[in-house]
Length: 181
Image 1 (tube, rainbow, N blue to C red):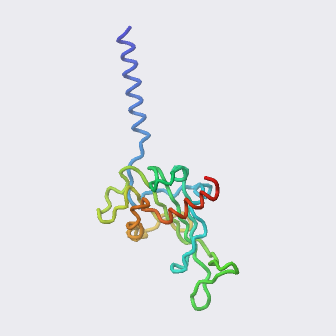
Image 2 (spheres, one colour):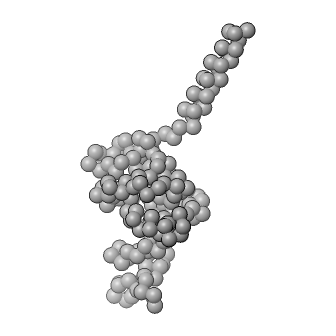
Image 3 (cartoon, rainbow, N blue to C red):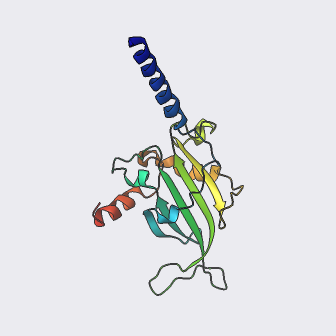
């Protein structure tokens, strides 16, 4: 009887290990982060970010894993940020147009970028371009993956090691504090 109980215990442990391993997220590399279909239902990381230099307005969403991160300057594995880049309206000379509120006037959605963090992500990235365990992907307005160079994403994020390679962290936490988080 004891050998039958021992066999059942070993079998159940084996299944737990098997299913535990099956649920692990496989590390991915740049260009492999999926564009979540429901990201617009996520909390906003920041909204209407004004970028006159790039002639863009940006909305950034954060999944619940990232939103649950505390002001420790490090986002948990499983965090995903999605940034929508909207063109801005320009005048005849090509200069960005602002509204009565002084903000850029949003035009059409042109690109969507995904930034995802996970253990072992970006393993194939050259050391000089590493941004922790973050990877990047680019999509057009229709959600089709693009061939955009993700080196540009990495180059901008590299100097941000103190904020887990994420821009405007202080602004994000200040906004959350005002909203009662």
